[in-house]
Image (cartoon, rainbow, N blue to C red; front, side, top):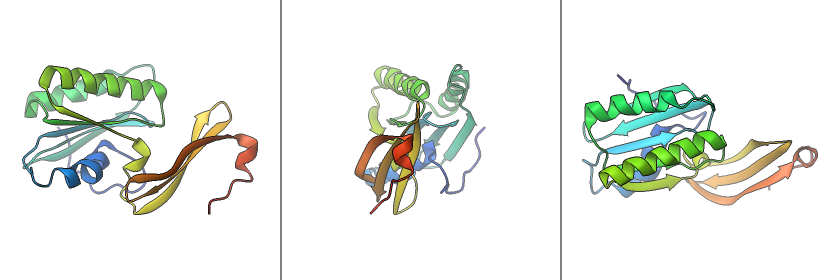
Length: 169
């Protein structure tokens, strides 16, 4: 079973999506069953939140094997049933992981009729304002500026040699 998870400040997780992006829009419906999936990073995560329960599960996110997502998803749905809202991380990050998460979320939405919400993964950290620089592979990076969980700049990409001279305002 999952474990209660403290607030996470160092990386994005599925639970961050629920806390920061969905709950503030669903406060008038506190009994909603919410499932969040985040597979854009090296650690995959799944969160379930409803009126009585807040759990999160994390695992090593192997780009070539998504079995851990489906094992955790099976466990959570057997225990709690179908979600009413499904939140999925849209990246940037692992292309394969993001595709798997989006495909799983769409499949769940089609079978259950749940509301589906896509959220840029970099917008889910519980920090008021921050900048993100991430590896876009092939000597390319991306930059974005986030304020109160919304993109205010980017994401935009740049190559490695420009990274050395990159400054934020």
